[in-house]
Length: 457
Image 1 (tube, rainbow, N blue to C red):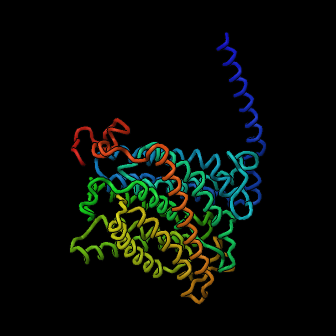
Image 2 (image 1 turned 180 degrees about the vertical axis):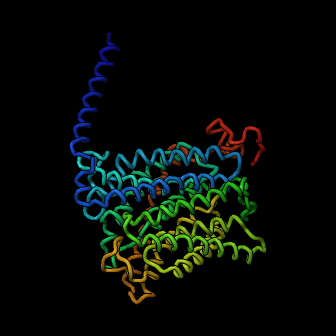
Image 3 (image 1 turned 90 degrees about the vertical axis):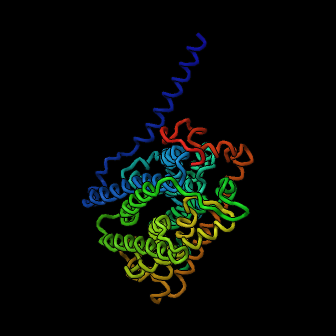
């Protein structure tokens, strides 16, 4: 009888909460009738943005394949689980709190304060469209970190950091740049610009990953007598497939950031995206051959991705030749960065910090250098963004430099504190025995290749 009373009490509470929330959720008609009346062309924009968002979501598969290919066979199940769960958690957490912090109005230029659980007036077709677009970017920022901390991070620590990135790290900096926050209103140029997320997405993920790699320490066998040793991944074919998927998905990532299917600038954005990726791949391949006399396909693959990362911020504001230059420099910076982090004892199994962190900073900087003065702040309206090389002076460059410093301090600082606190609380690294055996068996009980188990691989 007592158990029945308790059950009835919980049922009553659930019913009350459900209908209370429902009354808020359905307070506004979400059919979009008013939107159509005000803008008959809206359906094209919605379809365009949603298709591009679907492409960005599919990039999760690209990251999963790239990371798995660059890592060892004994950790592939673990990497698949992480890439799945950062999208799962990112979806739920960003819907509940992240979008409100990022786009829910503005409180003193620091963060948003409205739109929790997308209730009230946020139950709206336009708000849902915006939320979904920002959500797939959020999941991308979170998944970048997994490559930098691969093969030795406990799964529960990964789940916690995914929640923190989705709820706080990405939304808050995203608000500062895209949500009307203080970086977007800097009195230099047009304020800090980042068209599709070199900083908001990629540098955030890259520098949280750097913090995680530093707190974790290198994998066993990475250093012998202080010298870095190569730990080859188990499938270059899988890594190459991942890069091709990412390259394809980036044609949603960048052109979709017009957030308008009627902006014919999408053709320039698409071409710039492609050219920077090609230039980055070629420059990384050539510099690796110059250094080692080997055609390093892994470096070429990361070169393509770093070219994509770097062009993400300036893609709408630069000419095609500048996109090629940006990609070439990105490939060189990535190669130098990988060597630097190896030599200072920071083990990044897939090069995520060099590709997304360093590439993201270069992308932000390039806006202040190469913006050609023919496109405005996310719209074809004056004033136009103009960089140093096009006679715009140092204003836009200064805004970009400030944004670069802020994204590094924010992402690395919050990431380092987060990983340190977790490490002090429960230890974020698996034991040496577990690491040698592989995380697939220890953490998940499911090897990715059950018919092929080789110790150390």
